Length: 602
Image 1 (cartoon, rainbow, N blue to C red):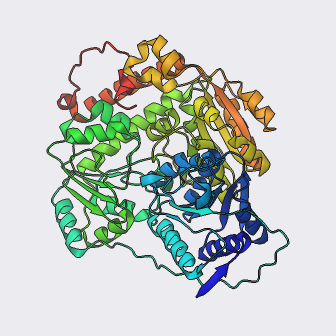
Image 2: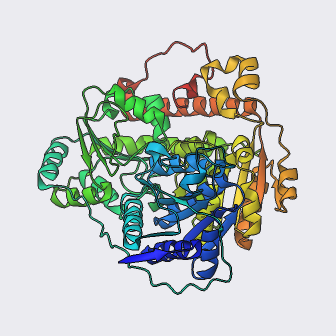
Image 3: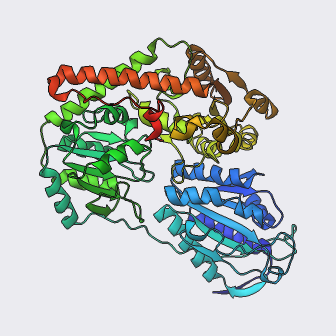
């Protein structure tokens, strides 16, 4: 159908109408003039949710958060120039983590580019390899087949939704940008429906993996991040049917089911202090999913040269975290687990599973014992103490990068069914963490708790304006150790002048002053009891707030060293008790670096 689009109003209205028909419900809009036609069109579509924010980098991560929670494409719109480039960090995270975004960058027309005009740059293919597809549309006024536009946008929407990836649409608008009094009477061509297809495991691959798993009694299932999989209970069913212990990443979704007969808690500590024991080493490992938080697990798995290692991942890119994979199958891990457990014979609980479970129980009790009598709140307790809250299963968690996600990985294991834990582990940056949590909270319409460090908080402080403006019930826990506490765990941390001046200088933040400047309620908690009371209060009220946990890098490191010493002692006792001298740990030379506990992890 040949149809003329003479004005930007018509053009923008057609694009917004099409995206809404396709399924986009949330449009995140940055401030700017060149995007005014799309903003005006959004104003006319009252059923669409339009969210405005002046910081495009924060806006991109907010859209990412909404998309994470809904698993549907969210549209983010910016004006020209550097405003568009500020979306790159969130687009990178979206691509690497597998989250559907539709990025629209508004542009000047061809005749205004590449000749020194204000606020112009080449925006075609702006995001490079970090989008599944990028197109630039023609500018109006122009006579062209509008079905070509609807077909192209329909295809991009399908790429975003079905492949869970970001896509990019660059749209030039000529001046005059708007005709406010114009009445639009156009009937636009329909969208093209791209039906999703799913890659089902082939009978050959099922038979192949089934034969391998059936051949071994000492097997492990290691589950990494699972951003798009549904029916995760199928993975637990597979674990129980094979009697294989399951080590589940905090972002896998598996821990949210609570305790299970095969799930192993505190596996990082078990591997660190007892992973060298032959009786704990598996003959086969089935990896499911994507990236893992735990470096320790991957280093240990890489050291198992005699162990068969298989990977099932939904990612259409290379995933080989140990470089020891014998077989890789690209399909949805939960669907594969379901198909696999339906053909596998059931096994009775094995002594190998019992051994892992006994270590798991020992470490869990030892960790609880260590923190039981602590009046002061230490950094790891910002996460573990949530397990004791009255409403511990009523809110979702967002865990920031750097130290908080590692605390969750090692210590957060819910004892009952809980809500989802989120994080940004695509490229694992500390930027945009608060914005992402706000997007998740906006989409859930219920309180979400975000735990971040002070550097992460500072990096994304402009997002607090959005929290206030939209009254989003996000509770932000800020661990304030005056900047970069993670670097005190690394081998070069003794070079204090280097760390404090060129790697992670002190932040010297006044968290309370920042909260007050945005009009956000603020509390400081130095005792564990005060912390839980404040959290319980905010969750009960369903309101937003910021809770600061003051900390010291040196004290935090010392607590970790004491905890590891305590766990090592208890694990050694357990080995001697259960297996006698055969399992006694070999004597190790004392380390010259007291911080080596964490150096292999971080």
